[in-house]
Amino acid sequence: MTIEPVSLTVVIPTRNRPELLGRCLAALRAAVSPDDEILVCDSASTDPRVREIAEAAATTYLRAGRPGTSLARNTGWRAAKHDIIAFVDDDIEVTPGWAGIVRAAFEAEPGLGLLTGSVDVPDEDRTVDHPTSIEQHSQPHELAAGSARPRGISGNCAIRREVLEAVGGFDEGLGPGTRLRAGEDKDLFDRILGSGARGRYEPSMRVRHVQWRTRTARLGLDWSYGIGAGARLAKVLRTDRRHARSIASELFGRWGFADLGRSIRSRYKLGMAAALLRLAGMVVGVALGLATRVRDGHYASSGPRSVPVRSDERSERGNV
Image (spheres, rainbow, N blue to C red):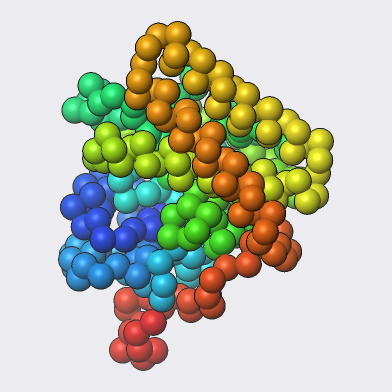
């Protein structure tokens, strides 16, 4: 049997972080092949350097008409040339073999719908206290429908276009730039795996997450993560009470009170603050989620979808 070669479209959502975007693109350019495509999807930045850096790196620049990381990602994959869509964030640096691992996984498994990978920190950030958005698990495994915390994050994942189309992509009412702040990746994984698509976590699909935030900002992320997690739970409560109980046990138990207890016993004040912020955020997120209308598995978003316009089409179609 002939194996069909796979080319990737890599989607990078970004907003007002040109220096981080430059680092991300430099690492990505060294990893992808000439047949792959890179789309920088601007989440309504006010800093003109974002577009300048994207176009200087010979990538395709797209702009969403309003802030929202989920909106930017959807704008990207809907404009993609290829059927395997990989997502990285602008504060992510892929490792040299990253693209080849993604490509090989989808070539070897035609039925694979979702692939997630590990997230480490750069060497210069290893002394950072309370690093964020890290995913370090050494063993590959299948991602199961109904999992309380499926491995992986939206900053390092790859998905077949037909799978994204089937579930409607990212929920534009969740994630950075929305009032529900986060949770868009676990929510997407819930819907993908719940649709019957196969998913796998592959630790060798490795990236590094730059720890650029201050300590205060990292704690602010715990608040946001709590709100997003609570909103995810509120959505599942509407459709699958058994799955919701599992999620609630994981979030409030292991990720909340258990982390708080460990931090209290070790007198780790930053850990105590982070756990308390997550717990409070989860309560707020559940309340906000239950008060927000859901249609076709998505929260009602605060504005119209942007039409994706590629930078090389602007002379014909104008600006978004």
